[in-house]
Image (cartoon, rainbow, N blue to C red):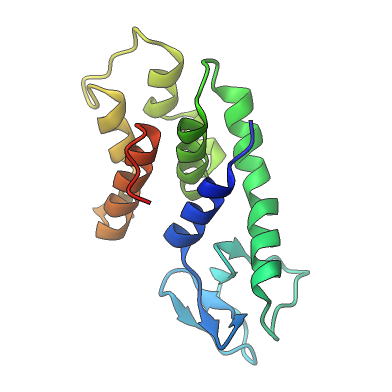
Length: 168
C-alpha cells in the first residue's frame, strides 16, 4: 500500500513547517524556529515538512512548496515499506495512512518493537500496560520521558483517522 493524498496532506498539517514568504526555510526541529543559515546548523536542522537535513544537502536559499512535498513523499517511502513488511493483517486506506503518520514520527525501529504492532498482528495479544490498541497508540506522546501536549494531540488525530473518524 501507499499513503493517499489525504494522508500526505494530513501529515503536512501535523508536521508543519516554517515559511518566509512562499519559501520553506531551515528550522530547528526542537524549537520550531528558523535558524541562521550563516552559522553551523543544529543537529535537528529541518526543512519543509519534517525533512531532517543531511550533511550533503544545501537548502540555505530555502525551497519551494513543490520541493517540500517532493522531499516529504521521498521520506515517507521508508515508513510505507516498513508498514507493508511488518503489518500482516489487511488494512483499509485510512488505517494505512494513520500508521504512516505514526511511523513517520516515531521511526520504523520503534514501531517494529511497539505494542501497537503486536496488537495489530495478533488479535489475542494483551498487555497489562496498554490494555488495547488505542492505549498503546496513545502512549507514543512522550519526549525524554515527559508527556508533550503536541504529541498527545497528534496521536489523537492519527487515531481518529485510523478509526475512520478523522475531522480533517
